[in-house]
Length: 199
Image (cartoon, rainbow, N blue to C red; front, side, top):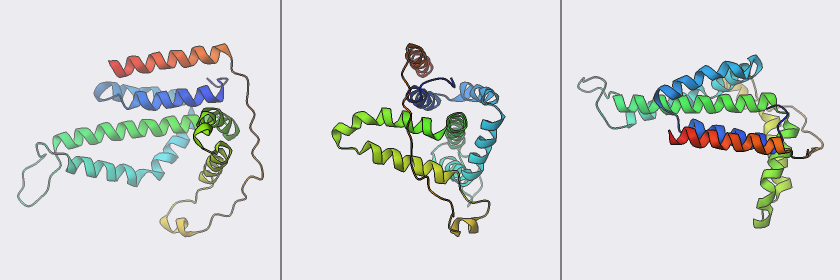
């Protein structure tokens, strides 16, 4: 996987995200057993992403648990209770989002930003015919990733502190040659995702 062409790597990552959206119940729980295969560095980044997204995750749980109609978890006058169906939906959506964050962490930890940008450039290049400035889009994406790595520390007050970090002066994209093995790997990933989504 580490030697996979960056464009094919991004496609495989997108396929993983699609496959995760098809998981629920026991298959969703079993998917978490695969996470240790990401390695310690990716898991550390994943935990960091979870910490940053904790309020989003909590909000999602509350909205779904209390917002989905169904049988209330408890019956007490004057107290709004979550529903069994809401908690089930919240657990499913939270599990999917947490797995997507793990996929993001694995991709960012194992792929240098320059290779990511090269892959994004190749994938976005066909959109140039409809007026998208691919060069500008890739530069902005690169800067967003660069500044996300310089995020402030803990505490909401740090969000008000200006980030002092120098932007990269240039972005060099190395576009490697696509190999037959890249296409075979991508085809296998597509078949796997189709199988997961049809089960």
